[in-house]
Amino acid sequence: DAMVIQNPRYQVTQFGKPVTLSCSQTLNHNVMYWYQQKSSQAPKLLFHYYDKDFNNEADTPDNFQSRRPNTSFCFLDIRSPGLGDAAMYLCATRHRGFDGYTFGSGTRLTVV
Amino acid sequence: GESVGLHLPTLSVQEGDNSIINCAYSNSASDYFIWYKQESGKGPQFIIDIRSNMDKRQGQRVTVLLNKTVKHLSLQIAATQPGDSAVYFCAENQNFNKFYFGSGTKLNVKP
Image (tube, rainbow over all chains, first blue to last red):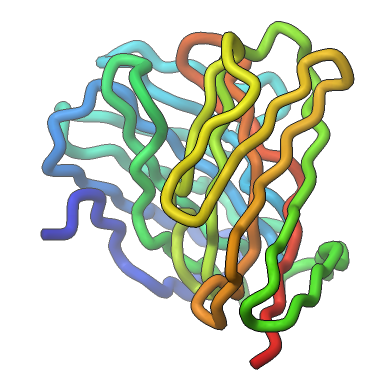
């Protein structure tokens, strides 16, 4: 029944070593989002895809990239993770701007 | 490791009491608002939404009030239960596609 699936749930990576987080959805929603959430803070929007159109937030560091090869999948690439990038990363989907998001369970990234 | 986060404001209520969680939003042009509940280690869950042409909307045990004059939202939970313990975020839709989240309130329900 899981509709937005994030893998893995927990990811440990080394400082500076590229890491990719994945998100898949079975809802056929056309909009997909990546949020970063640090401890006791609100989720912060990094970027989103409307279909294949990529939309970056102005304050998202260049270290963060995203790919959406098809409707179902979206990836978050962190090119050179720093200690400050340790956080929960949340994927969400939305259908054509209607209603709210459906969130995945998140991937908790630890940088060592 | 992860940077030290801010302390979330905490609301402690007795089981069975009503809870009111408040949120100030930033953009007077926002036209759609959602309250989310987030339990520890999980993604946010939709609770209730409201569009800017309304000032009140009721769900099951929850009510959202919107005051556009002062850019304020509130979430009222009736007969609060231990299962309501979580962090609650309001989110505002600032353009067609994007939601921005408020800072969150931790609800602690005492049995």
